[in-house]
Amino acid sequence: MILSKRSPARDVSVLALLCAAILIPSTASAFTGEARLGDLSVTAYAPDWIWQDREINILLVARNAGSAPVSVSFELKYPEDGAGYFSLKDGMQRAVDVARGAIGRQGFAGIVALEHTPDGRQAPLGLYEFRLQVSAGMERGEIRYPVTTIRGAAVSPGALAIYLPVGISLAWCVVFYWVLTRWQGRGAWRKYSTGALDLLVSPEWVEETPPAIKGRP
Image (tube, rainbow, N blue to C red):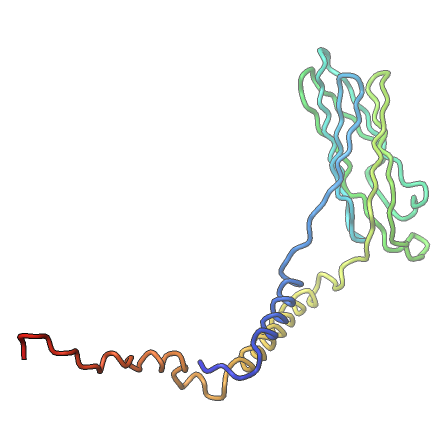
């Protein structure tokens, strides 16, 4: 392939930046909070951001290091400044019995970050803090769970969700075509490259005649 006189370094830099912007994933993150009630420890796992109109699931893991079984109760409190921006159908309370030296699991599933309130208003994006109250016998604790809501998906999960990746793929085909055509000359695929032709030229020392050795013709 014959390279054109245009600078390929600039084209490579542009292509590398475009690939990096699309292919390099952002760092995934999540929330982890803990409350200790005597010999009992409760850890909450949940996402720290969520799209609007998508569900939040909170996993609760209770570890009982004591010598007696314990009954653990959980109550979820909506953010004080955003109670109308979330919904949960299955109630705000959970409970689990944990044997001594064992681990019990419970959770809240299906907490929806609403895009519109029931009266049709746009739910504002922002940082909201849930409060997860934990009780075991006479012990009380609380885990504060902050979550950020962001705008929902750019496309609906219908036909457009299929056409968009196809369109992006076609766009990248155009980008690669543009870069490759800038690197090569016209009809380069039918010619040897300059480097390949140089390899076919023999060095000068191959044609030299060695000097005569004394005693030999």
